[in-house]
Length: 450
Image (cartoon, rainbow, N blue to C red; front, side):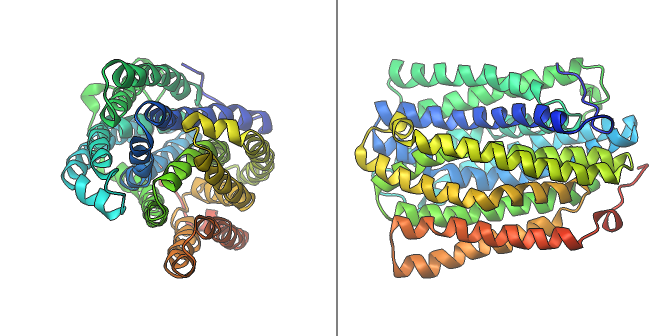
């Protein structure tokens, strides 16, 4: 297991890179679960199966994002206690987080199983895709306890600056996922049920690896299974930060469901193209997002240690490093977009439509990188509601309005894609203005003792 990173002393630039790169690669590997699913079913089961898998992505995001947001609250709280050197409260936060992850996962698994068919109907998927989409969603949601457990465990490691251990777990489970995809689909003749089952098994593997590492570590984040329970006082502080972030993610995903429904209305070819492009653009997004998470954790520890000047330096470095990294990644994907899209489906119409999506999305990333880092900066201080509100209004509000006005007047794939740079540009501008005027240290003070 990687060593704990000293974020409150010494240089910052190299440490931010050391933190962000494994985090970005981890995000990419997580997305490779879906990418592997799409590639296998796209080549061996057809466009209908591919559309069923890709079309479920916004729904899965909607159900997962509330608890992923709460895991961000765990990250911030543990990081602040680390800066303060409060090992007792670190332990309370860790054990509370694990219980919340499993309980939340069980809730989503049961609820999702009951509502799967109704959820897929909301997406307005074509008749030939519907039964496959329902089957995939039910199996995927059955694995929610291990999906959320991994995300909370990863947040615990990252709060101490350790992004290598979650990455190592994902490398193992990622390879397993690809092998199982081929075995179930090519060997046993399964379709979407095969790739969904492979994904659940892979997520189970990564969550078990991290749990074992947390049990064995000698750091303050060590888990004692006998102490697994919810500490109400710590939970309140986690939820204070995590719920606004989670609600933001849920509403963001809801807006994406509306957009996905609009994409679905344009037919199976556009659905498949959008899914393929999404699985490429997300690689660039995870690089961008990793610097936002780095900003949150570094600011959290330094704020907990009372070093506000280092917090401002973290912000500047994360903005600069994020801009360069995102530009390089997006440029490379655009340059090789045709062969990359053909990995998922060789249909020329799918490739052409996928390139349209990539062009609009990467233009939008010119604004999004700043929004990610500025939001992470505020959350590092424990200010979670403000970036959530800005994103809900600027991203979700604009996108919903656009789909129900502009798209209805001109129902085309291009008109859908235009909403991304518009909504992200507005949001980045609003969050920048807010960051200039908000003084987080006067708005939020974490409790020294619980």
